[in-house]
Image (cartoon, rainbow, N blue to C red; front, side, top):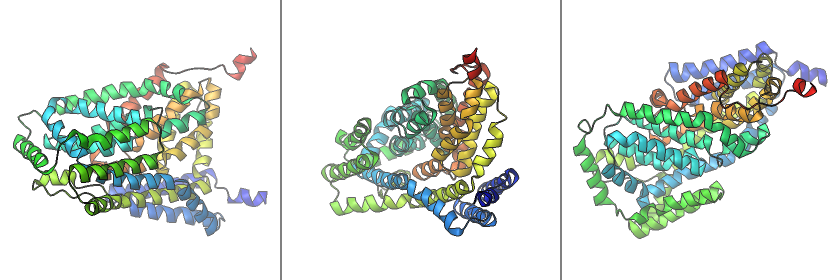
Length: 468
């Protein structure tokens, strides 16, 4: 039996070849041929299944591993579907139109990016969810930005960068609450250590976008169209402050740590109630909007484009991609492709710089390959724990590195859950907003600075030092 297991295990060259083929299929299909990720992911699943059969795994074993990954992530899939419902509800009740209207009324191009970055960061920080921040304030700021003449890709880059920065820094976020126990530290220790890369990156994002936004002066913006949009919102919506109460309720429930499912469902139902009470929509229409998405008919083309979104069905394409990505991750996990490769790589990392930056890169590459942030974090910790002990670096720094490598970079990966969700929600393809995804640039820069200088690095005594 032991001999049979050894024969089925991939060698290092076999694992490297399998990985190279799957990555090549992704890059050729998505970047080279301009395809959506669906077919490249499906082809990669076929590659992994064939590799498993060649090594002696049964179809049942391979498919079973894929189904296990899907089963472990049904909660994530359910939450994403419900977020589509929430967006439809908030559009119908007037919460998002209210924010767009007063955002246009009070905001200038000069301060647009500062407001967008700070507010999306704070929203994600308080809720622990970049998805919530992007799907609520992010959608509203996209409307404001487009009305002011700011390119959608640039606005999306600022919104997503700020939201993910808040997510990875929040003690309420899933990544912090996974990374901390994996590394044997508390969430608040991990959050404190994350400040050394997150806060400088946030300042860099705000400054860089403010400079880029200076190209779009008030005179360059289409003020006539802005006026038409504001008139269209004022004519077709009751802009009572009551309309934002469902959004505030969502925020309160998240701060109270109510689970995601009831929080989103309650918020969407309250949105329906306010849609009927404030916007005078019928119950049947409201329920239809929750299912198929809100359809704006204001007569202003850009406004209708901005507000026609949401609904359960709007998230089906994202869910399909997530299911394909998880299936691929499950097959690779069964073959232990990444575990075999990382075992060889991690043994060569000795210095502080190589350990810290190597952990960051490893976490990012695992997300790039598997499309699963959480699996990438788990595998990285398993591989790098001994490296940190050998270098005498406190595990809280490892927590920061895996969060920075996984969470910070996931928004720029077209086939990753976050990248797919952001693209669908904001209506901007990942490859279009990547040039403006400054969270990735800033995180790499400040991770390098920390690794090179030791700023923000906490140490422990090594076994040899303890013996002396």
